[in-house]
Image 1 (cartoon, rainbow, N blue to C red):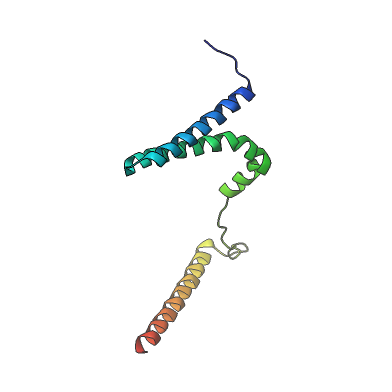
Image 2 (cartoon, rainbow, N blue to C red):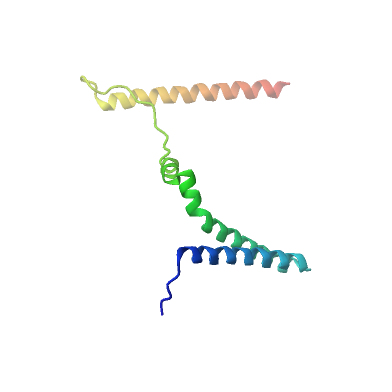
Length: 124
């Protein structure tokens, strides 16, 4: 049996459930002697907080325009620097070898700097 309910009534019901969860959780924590009972009160408060977030989500979505923010956060990527041009007779294998050599020399220089830094601190 379907009973029609307006959007306003539904929001009021959600808000009442959130308020009931907050009050119940606060009372349980307030009168509890054991830690387990306090944990149950915390679960009530956490569920009420989640209900409040669900209740406020449409407002937050329209207010902060989350449709434009969330896709840009999800599409963050690290873009490597463009490499050497492989056109005009250069083969891609030679370019890869040169790139590997320059990376290897960079790693070698970094290791030498780290070794030199380690020697300096060991003597003092």
